[in-house]
Length: 309
Figure (tube, helix red, strand yellow):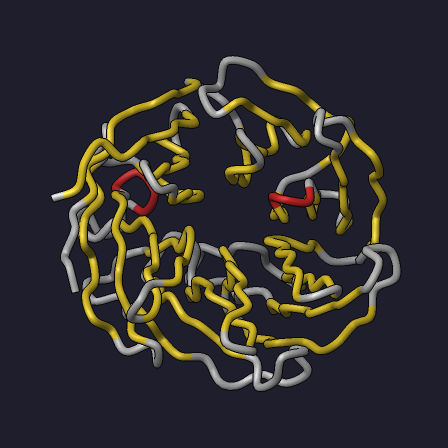
């Protein structure tokens, strides 16, 4: 297996942009700016703001479908046409608890959604307070309108965040961060469904332990010839500084999630202060969507691969 260190350079940035979740979408970026769904060109030369309240998002790129959660405890779906105009926007669930980090996946003619519902303290970072209860719900639909609750994948008294869902080899794979306290030591895990419809789920497998108390934030997972490549940010070199000490890395795993190599650096234009949001791998380039200096300037930046070595 080739050990590559990605060397990336800055492609575009916007300083002091208060934004939430951000992902590559169509030919640009979809995010939430001041709680409103917003689309940017990849070079950030223009933006388009939609009358949709959102904080956490995921999308099916090729279909123009975005699933969102917001501060009003709503889970909703927006569909855009080829000109980025809204075709439809509707709320599919309202809860008395906050719902974060939705994901959406299509398998055949069926759509699947997860949402993480939090009861009690949200994103708790204080050792003297109890953590809230996090429940990851799993739903399916054949028409994006009528949704069936399939099962609750997991319910735990810890922070469960940054979920990435894949369907691979006849099973769903849910990658996520697990932490006792926000911005403290965290592990990155995966949990697999036991059937192709997601009716039952196995136990979690820890992919990356926190070896020196580092906070690790998963961003994307790609299939490889030998298994899986996980992209993430971590304050490995400055434990305890969370996002402000964060840098970009990747780790490789075989088909059975045995660790092959970890903490391989991705050298970007900015070496620290990084929360990695998303990764887009193309034939010519790799793109990295970054929330930079989250505690101070809230910059959104895109790095692009310059070379591999």
